[in-house]
Image (cartoon, rainbow, N blue to C red; front, side, top):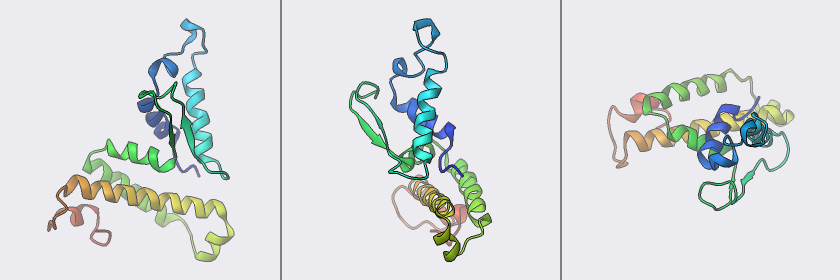
Length: 158
């Protein structure tokens, strides 16, 4: 299982890359038309690799600010989820939670299978990030709110 999708990586990279250095490179100006997708594909492979640090770098030449940045799975997920409405986050959270519950896990299985352990951890990270965004978007002043966050995202998680 991939811990981050190609579309999520593409969204993140497009938001942080200078257009002229990514999808602005086409056959019309001497590059292959699929140049941008090939760059995104490399980031996608690095972030989903089973081994290694799974961190990527956008150099200062490519980044929109002119500064280099490092990013990982969590940064991509945070950026994608930050753009969703609370209703969209709830739908996504429920889908991820359902996927998490569908995994047949026990501590013995998690310890025996690194891929399962990684997937389980990634799904939990996603839920945590969504939970935090929901708390922020629904209750920005962090005050207790009866019938708000708890009703939308589940009282057991609030």
